[in-house]
Length: 285
Image (cartoon, rainbow, N blue to C red; front, side, top):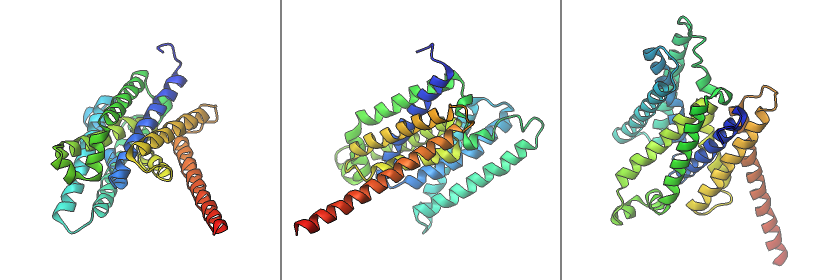
């Protein structure tokens, strides 16, 4: 495995990231918080830029820490706005998303006007550059993806209780507050480790589309996780393979296009299945 070429490492990394995104996408879908993923994905930009401004170097660890702090701060504001105002959660998410991302773009402009700012490569975090990932970054992504997916699968019963009926979960002795923090940590971690490969904007898509595509074929949390993870991994594999064929196609956008294509096929297939069922019922009557 250590002898794999860089292209193979990129492929393995994006497949792992796609599987992880699909798994987390299933959690956010069943928690009715798909927009939360979008908000937190956009909210990491100020943290990435500020970490570069403070350190002066494009160091992955610093930027990941900055992104995580920014995302957690955004989640705090969303909770605070929802709790202390009459606004609904989706409105609060929209406000925080727009505010943090706009702040990030302003700071990005400041950085680009600094000496050597254009050469910093910070702009790549918006759309991602999977091909430029270091081997240790890709290995870390694969390892974290395996750990998080395993953590979710091994505690699937508890996740089911937490997502579907928190009040009943409390009666069963489940620490709901701890699971709420774990859920938020997993979403933020997935975003942070994925932004360098597919970018801030496209990471939001990967945390929404796989679960949306699987909803037509799944009725339980386990089924949704399995199908959503499969859709995320396969769209990442196909998108990465196409982008490595020498046509200068960016990896992140190609992955999202493949995921969107699978969603479209899923939607059309489900509609056709429902249409054929209605025809059969009319024929029997």
